[in-house]
Image (cartoon, rainbow, N blue to C red; front, side):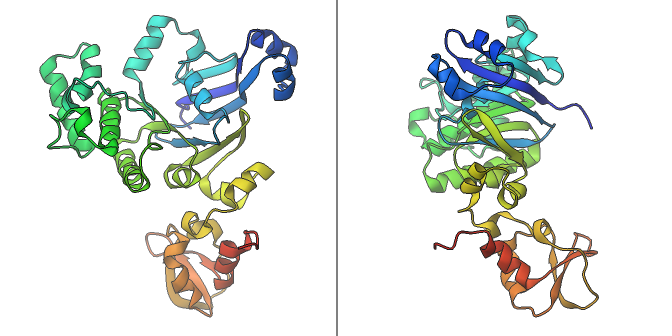
Length: 343
C-alpha cells in the first residue's frame, strides 16, 4: 500500500482557556461532560483515520458533531489541541507559516458552503484569481481558467458577474476556482447544502463526473445521509466529536457499529444503496435459473427481475463469469428485514 495522503493520529480539538492542560491530565480519555463543566468544549475527540490517494471520504454528522472542526484541523485553518496530522507524510503541525502557505497554495483546494466569489470580477476572473496570486502570468491563468469553465459546464457564461448567476452556477464557479490550482487534496465543507434539491442533485452528479476524471483525494463534509451514500468511497459518521464508525456505505447500512449509527441508517432505502455484491451468497447449486445479474448493479435496478424468479439467480462479473448467487428471498429480507415495522 502506498502512503496515505491524509493521516490523523488521535487528533483532539478542544476549545477553552485550559484545554491543553485538561487534555494532558485526561491522558487520552476525554469525557465531553467533564470538560464542559470545566469551561471547555470538545470539538474533535480522538480522531484517527487515513485517506488514500484518489479516495473520497465523506464525513457526516448533525450540526455540532465536529465534522467541520475536523476539516479545519486537517487544513490547519485551526490548530489541533493534540495528536498528529500528516499530509503526504509531512507533519502538518510542524510546518512553519511559509511551508503551510506553500502547502495550501499548491496542494490543497477548499470549497465552502458560501461561495465567497469576488462580486466585481467575472466568472473567468474569479477562477483565474488564485492562479494570479501564485504568480502565474495573466494570459496563462486566463487560458487555464477557461479550461476550468468548460470542465464545470459554464461555457458561454465566463463573462458574467456572480450576481448574474444562479446559486448552482455560483457553486460551480467556486468548484472551478478551487480546481484551477490543481490541488491533490480537496476539502469540501457542505458545498451543496445551500442549493435547492434539484440543483443539488445535478451538482452531485457533476461532482462524481469530475471525480471520475480527476481522481482527487477528497474529504467532503455533509449532514445529508443520502448525499454521503451517493458520493462516498467511505463514510465517517461523527457524534460529539467522536468518529462513531468509518466504513463503506454498504457496511454502514448493513453493519452499523453503534446504536447511533443504526438510528442514522434505519430509514435508508437499502435497495438504493446496496449493490448485488453486498448481499450475494457463494455459488450455491448448479440449479440456477437462466437469469443473470451483474454484481455491481444497484439492487433497486434488478430487484424486480430477481423477484419474478422461482430459482436462485446467478451473479456475474463484468466478463460474464459467475461469481455468486442470489436468492429472491434474500432480496426481500435485505430490503425489508432491517427496518422497523412501523411504516
